[in-house]
Amino acid sequence: MGQITVEKNVGGIEGLCVITPTVHGDNRGYFMETYNQRDMEEAGINIVFVQDNQSCSTKGVLRGLHFQKQFPQTKLVRVIRGIVYDVVVDLRRDSATFGKWHGEILTAENHKQFLIPKGFAHGFLVLSDIAEFCYKCDDFYHPNDEGGLAWNDPAIGIAWPELTGAYNGTASAEGYALADGTPLNLSERDQCWKTLADSHTF
Image 1 (cartoon, rainbow, N blue to C red):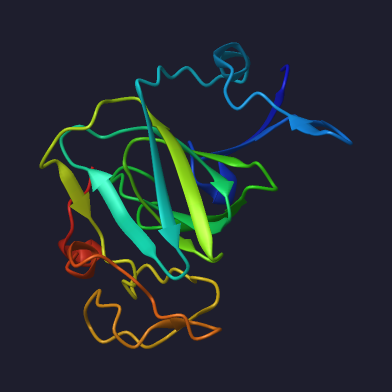
Image 2 (image 1 turned 135 degrees about the vertical axis):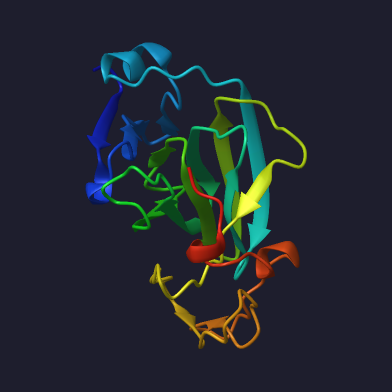
C-alpha cells in the first residue's frame, strides 16, 4: 500500500478498520493524503463514497448513537480539530459480535480514520473545547431514515471516558458530566432513543 496503514477487524469486530495515513512533515508543517481510492482498494476496501459531511461541536457534546434504517451507510470518519471518543455498536443480528461496542480516540494530531460498515450504530463524545468532525458516506442522506440507540444502554455498557453519572432508565443527559464538571450535552432527540432490546437491528 502507498500512503496508508490499515488495522482490520479492530476490537475483534468484523469489518471495522482503523486507517492511518502517512504524514510527511518538516519545519514548515505537514502534508498527507486524507483519501486515496487506489490505496483503499489495494487494502481490500472497495467502497464508493458519494457524500462528505462536517460538524463542529463543543466540549461535552455527545452525538449519537445513530444509524440509517432503510438506507444504511458505510462511513469513514476523522477529526480535523480537537479530540473525540468515537464509538460504534454492532447491530447486525447475524454477527458473532452483535451488541458489542468499540471506541477509538480520534484527534487532529493522530490523524486516525475509522471505517464503519453498514449495520452499526455510531456516535461520539467531544473531549476538547471544540471538535470538528468529518466523514464520508457511501449513500446520500435520506430524510426521515435516521434511527438511534440509547448512548448509555447498560446492556451494552459503553465506557465513555471522563464521564460520570448514573443511569436512570432513560437516555437523558441529566446528572451526567465530564470529570472537569462540563455537563453532558445531548439533543432532545438523542435523549429519547431506546435500548438495544427495543431498537431497530439489521
